Length: 158
Ligand SMILES: CC(C)(COP(=O)(O)OP(=O)(O)OC[C@H]1O[C@@H](n2cnc3c(N)ncnc32)[C@H](O)[C@@H]1OP(=O)(O)O)[C@@H](O)C(=O)NCCC(=O)NCCS
Image (cartoon, rainbow, N blue to C red; front, side, top):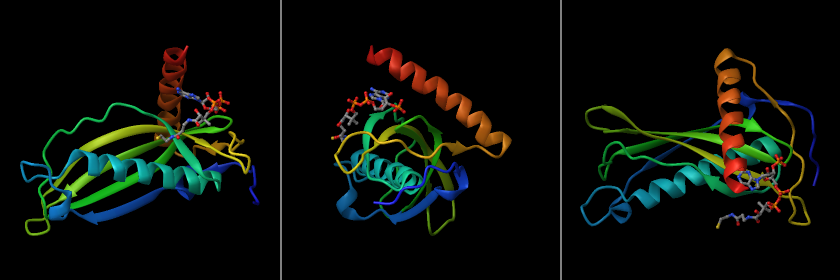
């Protein structure tokens, strides 16, 4: 599989998904099941990292996910994922979840999560990925914050 190790900008792999929450996504209270949102968050983060790495990635760590408000069945769920940090073989994605009531247009920010992935080579072992080009001030700030999160994960691993 061809993979260039040229640095890549954050914008090249950012991804947005939209889903309509359906009755089969409900919890016993009739709102959206948190596990369904977690699955979408993990998939969106992985997709951004795969676009950056041009390799399959696996999830290594999911930092805390906090649901600030319940999501109603019938609400649209918008998920945006962007790569915030790249190590040698690891990548962090920031995944932002927002919902919209399609009838009123009301939008609610429900969740931001940080997930760490590792890119795998054809042998199933971690493989180097292209460095990340943080171009804007916001991307540079996010990169620095992500480095600190990764330092904390690695300290906890020991
Ligand atoms: C991902 C996996 C292959 C890494 O194997 P490993 O032997 O730990 O590999 P390494 O020690 O070389 O680490 C690879 C990278 O992951 C990072 N890493 C590993 N464990 C980590 C952790 N707990 N937190 C943060 N980063 C971690 C390392 O720092 C390294 O990053 P770098 O190359 O950017 O410096 C292995 O942990 C694995 O297979 N995990 C299961 C993944 C999976 O199945 N996910 C789905 C969940 S069901």
